Length: 158
Image: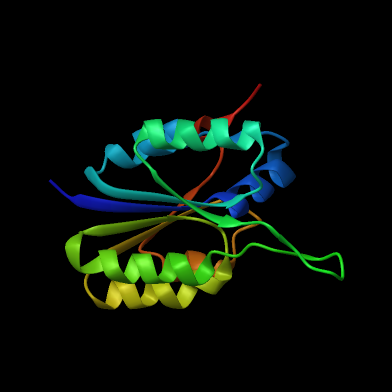
């Protein structure tokens, strides 16, 4: 059975799904969809920790599904801008996991990851990208072995 590692860019998924559809992303549906292709042996969800109760409840839901939740503190700069970026952490974790798995799944539409997916594929590992159509960088779609549009069953409609 194919061994799969999953990496979910929570911030990217939240904002792109909200912008495109006005609803939330269904992580349980993502887990089920990926599980049809093999066994999930590693799964990480990268989020920003603002410390509020609703977020902590959401993070527990992710843990219950099987994700290891990685948190960074939310940083408000003096100029009013905010920082909370997991790109380097995601890259390091994917590069660490690639030798142990047959497939890497990245749930993010961020084009900054295109070179990462190309590198993963150069090792003979499949690189699958899940992203919102129209809000996923075309360079990421091209770099992936397979692109899965986030739509329909992958959305939580309230």
